[in-house]
Length: 59
Image (tube, rainbow, N blue to C red; front, side, top):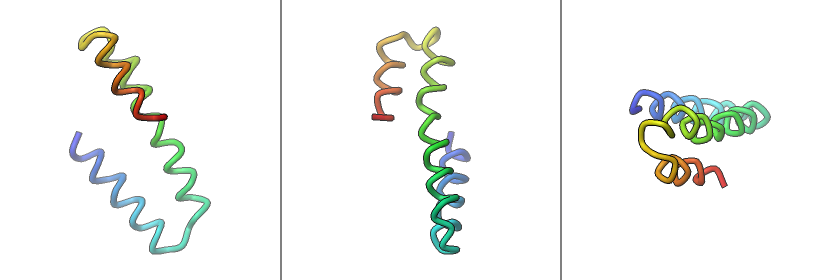
């Protein structure tokens, strides 16, 4: 989990400093899908309510 957060933070930082705004928007849009995929993957193990609270962070 920590490596995923570190890599996305590094990617966003690099895109901001290189002024790649379209790429930054695309990366942030795609990365917003992570909580939704986590919902489908982990809902059977942690329960639907907990997984739904995790997926609600997209909004």
